[in-house]
Length: 196
Image 1 (cartoon, one colour):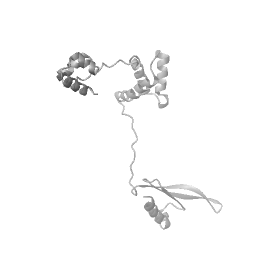
Image 2 (spheres, helix red, strand yellow):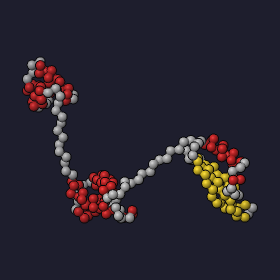
Image 3 (cartoon, helix red, strand yellow):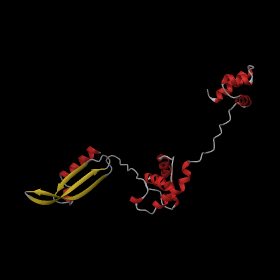
Image 4 (cartoon, one colour):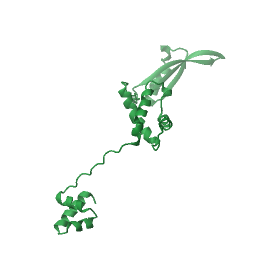
C-alpha cells in the first residue's frame, strides 16, 4: 500500500468510529501519522536529509592541484586516476576511500578545471554520414610492377565508395585521362551501380 492509500483507509476507518490508537495498531503506523492522515488528505513530502560530507572533501584541493599541473604537462606525463589515487595514499595518507570514488571525482572535475583555465572543452569526433551512391574517393598512387622481367613504374587507380566502403582498383601505365576511357570507365559505372 502506498502512503496515499494508507491515508485514505485511515480516514475511512475513522469515519466508521475507530480511534487513533486502534487505527495506528491496525495499519502499523505511528499515532502521529494517523493524526496527519486525519488532518490532511495528502501525506507531507518526505524531508530530505542534509547532504552528507564526503570523505574525499579533505583531498579535493590536492586532486585539483594535480589536475591543474596537468594542463601544462606533456600528454604522456599527465596524471591518470590511478596515479592520483596512488599519490593520495603515499603523500597525503589517504585511507578508507575507494578507487572508484577518486575516479568519479577526477572524471567530473577534469573538464571543469580545463574550462576554468580558459581552455576549450575536449573535441569529440563526429560520425560522418554518407548516402548510398553519392560520395566516392578517388586516388592514384605509384606501384612497381614486374613486366617482362623488368621493374616498371605503373599507376594504381583506387575508387572507393564512401557509403559501402567497397573499392575498385585498376593498374595503368599512366594516370592521365586515357586511364578513364574504355573498360575502366564502364567498370566504375558498374561498381557505382552495384555497390551503391
